[in-house]
Amino acid sequence: LKISFNKLNIKGVKNELLNFIFDNRFYILNSEMIHSVVAYKDERLCGQLSKRNYSTIIKTGYMPLIDYVHDNLAFYIDNIILYERNRNEDIYQIIELIKRCITEVDRCKRIVSFERFSLSNISICCSELFPEYKSELEEIWNTLLSCGKVEPTWDNAERYWNFFGLSSVLIKFIEDNADTIVSKKNKCNNEVLREEMVHSDICADALKKLIQKLKPVSFDIRLENICEANVAIMIDHRFLPLNDSYFAELSEHHPSLCEKFILKNKSEFLAYMPSIPL
Image 1 (cartoon, rainbow, N blue to C red):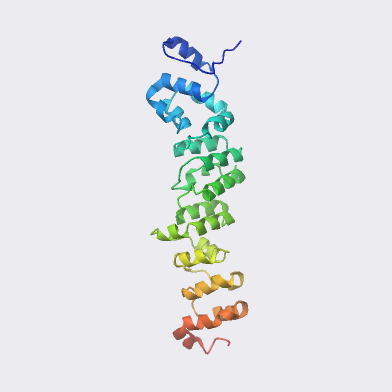
Image 2: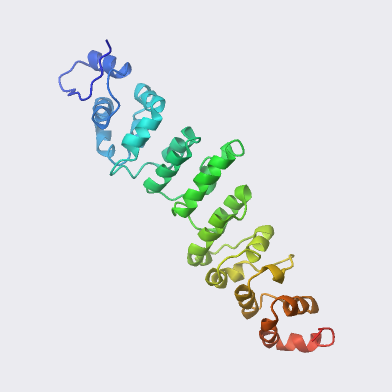
């Protein structure tokens, strides 16, 4: 008959008996018993249990308890981690939990949504598991972006893009955080990403804010695949150099914008007049 304590007052109990109970898992894995084990090992840590339970357990260094949690991880996450006030786990311990249950995507996504944290670098969240767990990692990273758990920077946008391309989730992340991204001193240095952004269906409001960070260096802009509102923004910001090629493409795909294009480039237009098909 195996004894399993649901609650245990450790005061006055001999260390030999407590070691026997705790080392051999003669207790149920619940908040009360975890508190008792941590109190026995280092009572100073008990005050953190309600806010960062897993991080506190790891900090004890007590392997019988740590292994007990890892061997019953799904139960532990559902009943203790994702409970009430436990929203301040250490970032690296959150990532460790996600890594340990990477195939249980819904549980990982619940952890991401529940905990309070922000990643300065999205790559630290299990990028080493790519490509073996590509689909799982993509769902988790999408949740990181959509839940605002990643610092909005061009660097993080590019890190995500390097793994999963310019997805609708990444575009939404950039749109929602355009003001913050623009306020950063850095810019989008990846020419291919800039090209994809320019040709994407990013909303007009975000494009207005980001356009100077997307200026092309070596790529050509294909106007046929860009909505008229975004082409108009490019013209307003003199994003498109006036030449016969762009004028011909504009005349074919967005003829209503030709006059705006000319007015924004008056001096250049006079030079190109002989070669531009009017």
